[in-house]
Amino acid sequence: MSADLLDWTDVFALSDLENEAITPVSIGEKALVLYRSGDEVRAFDGKCPHKGAPMEQGVACKSHQATCSWSALGTRPAFRLKPDA
Image 1 (cartoon, rainbow, N blue to C red):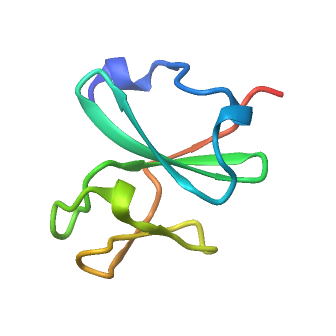
Image 2: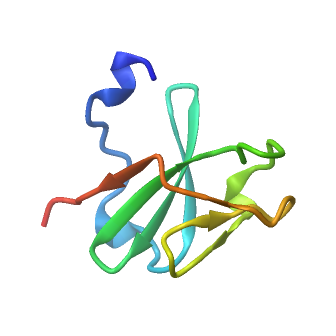
């Protein structure tokens, strides 16, 4: 991962993210999807690592994995984010 992606980038306020839903976002040329569960936000790669499908079409699971709608395989989050209060 490039060093510029390790810097914090504000993309949404917590209140702007729908709870228990996947929200697509781009940071530069990097596509990600965010998943909010209560006060926790997790970021996943925007493409399925198995089939390259857009993860914004995936289904968020209670286990904090995103499941690809093409491969039906789960992927773990790339990042676990703690939003500011």
